[in-house]
Length: 152
View (tube, rainbow, N blue to C red):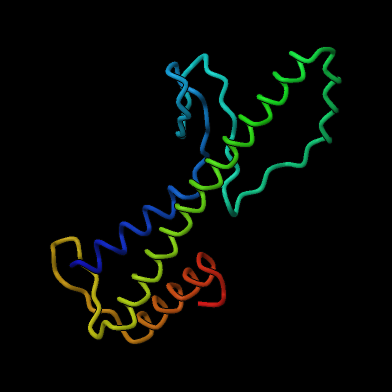
C-alpha cells in the first residue's frame, strides 16, 4: 500500500513539476511564486529546468545614466535583479535535489521489492507480472538518470 501511495504521489508530483510558475513581488516586498499571479501585479515567467522559452530579440542596451544618482539607482537595480536570480537559482536547485532524492528512493523501493501490486477499485491487490515490474524499474531508473544525471 505504501508503494502505491508513493507511486501515485510521484506521478501527481511529476505533472506539477511541468506546470508554469510565475514570480512576483507582493505588497510587503517579498518575492512570491505560484502558478497563477494575482490580478494587477506584474509577474514574470520563471524558467524551470527542462523547459524552453521562445528565443527573443536581443535586449537593447539601456541608455547611459546621466548623473551619479541615476548610475547608483541603476547599479542597485542590477544588484537586486542579480539577488532575485540567485534566489530563483537556489530554489530551483533545491527542488531539483528533492526530485532526485525522491526518484532515487522510488527506484530503490522498486529494486528491493519482490511482490509488487496495485490496488484495484474494490481494494483488492493486483500483483504485477515480472515484465510489469521490470518496466516499472526501467522507468524509475530513467527518471533517476534524467533528474540526477547519468553518473548515479
